[in-house]
Image (cartoon, rainbow, N blue to C red; front, side):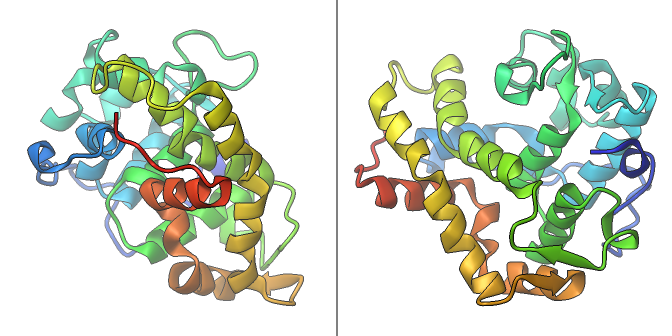
Length: 256
């Protein structure tokens, strides 16, 4: 994400994102059997509305020099509610997750978190409407957001890395996070099975693009957002992404 996007607000929500941050109610983890869904729900992202989260990532990124990364300290300064208190502990599950390789890009230091990948994770796991999530996804894919881009193409060059990261977050990364957090006692899927899942990432992308574009090559930004929100919003559910990848790879989902 370029500096111009970093230093400006891109979302289209009517929410007053610069107001005080408050925590939404916590999930009842005891009611969740699936260890991967339980892990995702155990982090505080779903207790924060997406537009508020995106604003605070931008503010933290600005404090870090607008260089495409944030730190735990910068995030904690912005996310200062009780739900996010584990950001102050560098060995907490939340902190270790954000400092993991899944949130890195080349040349980032150990204490730096790629802000683009944090935004992608937030789209998956923060609370918010599918329209808000579609708006934010557009702004991740189109550097500069709606102000600079009236159209988006089916072959947009920025979709591939974002799509692969979403699939990674929904599968291999969360499998590793869940194991590291002790929510499973051993690896649920073999390396071969994970490799097979990731082999079908491109097939799943075609499944997602087809109802959005049909035979068209490009769409107006507003139309794209509407179509994603209405016809392809399963991209915003990590659990649904897993289910669809399992189906493509003909692997039976397991919990332990």
